[in-house]
Length: 109
Image (cartoon, rainbow, N blue to C red; front, side, top):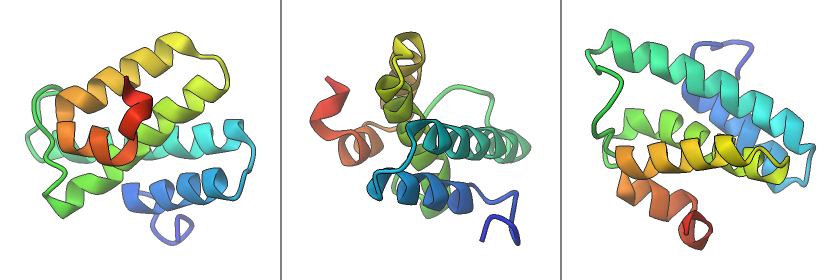
């Protein structure tokens, strides 16, 4: 799907999710999530987002971004990137507490 729709955050989120759920390489999952995260930022900014503030989980088009952000945080934690884990998990909680609870659960503490 990412080959056909490389600008789709949902496609990159699906790749990162699959990599993680199948016990794949955390670096590969990190890379997929990072691409999706950056693609998402581009889309959000084109739609008027200023780089801060709420990104509601309840709005379906935001889920690709929020999922990539969560998976980026988790993969960073797995590979020992503590600063990146802190930054991404905080950014997720500030963007959507619902997404943080849904995607990180108890890990976010």
